[in-house]
Length: 201
Image (cartoon, rainbow, N blue to C red):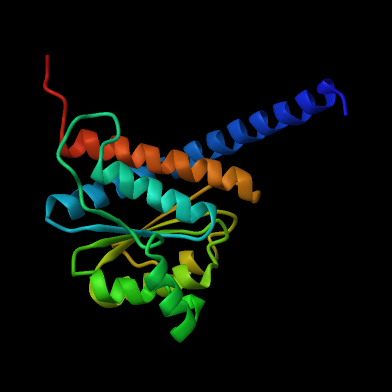
């Protein structure tokens, strides 16, 4: 395969990614701002942010929790972020005893308090264990920020007035995942600005 063929394919990936991000920017900016304010209120009130997803979305959940606990770009105090995707003993015990669709919901039921927020990440919006986690967070008295794609799936239908959906404007998994990490970086930047505003020169 020639380099020119590869370059053409790779250029298409870049162009498709740019198009998906532009379409999402046009469609989801109000929701993105709302989600940042929702998370800021959660953290400012002493609540915690729990995050979950599968595969690449699990990595995104861990990435986001790490940015909260460490930092994004601004030096500030640690923020309470918990990835529900990292405890292999809990995940395998729950999966073995109750089924894979309960691996996040059981953790939410154990850890979540009223006023906490769940970041539920699913490119299709139909991941069964993320759906169950959203239901568990609602039962715990918390709110949800759902990162979805395509038509929003089951997750979009579960959300309540205090929740926010951030939907990537694409039907391609890779493009949705690329938009999701941009959503998360925007949320990190928004939290820095809302909770730790830079001094006015």
